[in-house]
Each structure stands twice: as C-alpha cells, then as structure tokens.
Length: 311
Image 1 (cartoon, helix red, strand yellow):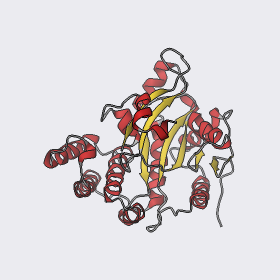
Image 2 (cartoon, one colour):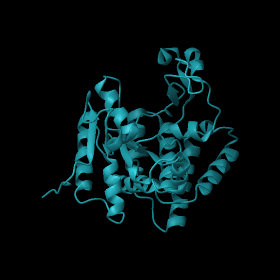
Image 3 (cartoon, helix red, strand yellow):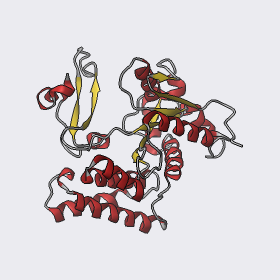
Image 4 (tube, helix red, strand yellow):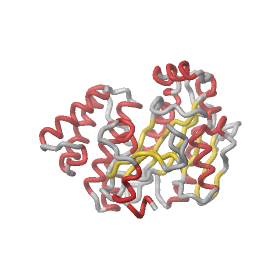
C-alpha cells in the first residue's frame, strides 16, 4: 500500500494549470511561485512540481531524512509530469529528463545548487540521440550531467572534471566547449565516469529514481552550504526559511546554434528603466551563463541574431 505524506509537500503545474500561485513564496520559494503563476497566465512553461520549503525544514528536523511519505508523493508527481509530457522517467525509448533546482523565498543567485539533464544514463542517452537525431547534443548533455551530478551530489572535486575538459579541448584543438565533436564528448563522458568511480569508489548511478532521490537531498543540503549561509548572513536572510526544490521538465539550450539560454529582466536592474535587460548564449545551458564560460552578449543583440525569438 502506497504511503503518502501527512502534510502537503508537493505542488505541481502543467497543461495550463497550477496548484500554487505568486502569493506562495514562503512555501514554494520565488522560483516555484513564479513557475506556477506563469503557467496560470498561459505562458509556455515546462511541466514540473515544487517540493516545499516546509519539506526542507522537516528534512533537517528529522536528521536529514525525507519526511515519511514524501518520496511516494514525489514519484506520484513524476507520474503526473510523464502524463503531461508523454515521456517516461527512465524510459530508454522516450526519456523524460528533468532539472532539479533550488528556490528560496528570496533570490540567492549562484549560492545554491542545480542539477540539469537528470534521468540520463547509458540507455536513455541512446534513446535521446535517436529521438533528436543529434549525437553531439546527446553526448554533450550526458557529460554535463555527469559533471554536475558528480560535483554537486557525489561531492567529486570540480577541478578534476575541469582539468579533463581542458585536456580534451587541447587534444582536439578546440577553443570553446562548443567546438568539441560527438566523438570527443563521448570520450569525455567515459573519462568523467571513471573520475567518479576513482573518487567515490562506486559507479555513477544509472537508475533515474536513485538520481532524483540523491539530487533532492543535495539541493536541500545546499541551503546550509557555506556559500548560502555566508550570503544569508550578509543579506540578513533568516536561516529557518529553507529552500524549495523545483523538478522541471528539461528544455535544452545546447541543441545547436538555434537554441540557447539566458537571463532576462523586464527592467534594467541598475537604473529601473522599463526596458528588456539581460544576456544570453546560443548552444549552451544555464550554468554556462552564470559561470562565464563564454562571454554572453546583451539580450538586445538577439534582435538581429534570433529575431523570431526576440519578438
């Protein structure tokens, strides 16, 4: 018999409907409340769900254990996302891939953790390549996932992955990550898996549900990470707010030069002027913008580079 949590810890959205709204920042965090509001407003929003800040606080109160019934509720929410997308979590033929993102009541940019492309493994990778017909994209998504999950969830030194990436670029004569071809990225993914095995003594987890369980706990843990704690102290943000966790269907910015990622504001944060403000990168994923891996052009340049998107 399935055991559900005694409290309501999960609020979903998709198919134009949302269970939360913008007034619920305390419970859903800024990101979760915003995604719910965008869905209700009819904006194109990938289906997903938010695990509440209350779940985070109860997780720590229980000695870093998920509250009773929460995991069963997570799996039920995943099934609802599968229904909305027509994809299967862990399905090798038509895989559902998700991001697992932090989301506190107050914005704490870059202070907590995010994992992208979760659900990839040796089987779902080849399903993704077959579906998209884009081998380079598939291997790029997979090596990114191993790198992010390895560093954030399995606590492997990020420098080990960076050194391997730089060596691969040097070998290929590539200036940018985007210059690496499918074969180079396949070799890099293999090397990343070997790094995880050497550093942790275990193989990289293949099971999508295990990946999700570990990632949720890692995002909760990042609330008390040094970066986040120092930032809250500096900004006067209370420690007892907790972070929500947002599990969102992946939308890929690294499928080629006609896709991308970026950050945008409806006002200039420096002057308050009512003008679209931000920056973006083509053929990239979100961490590339934040980490400054490539110089991101101002969003106004998109008007000439990708006019149909800018419009």
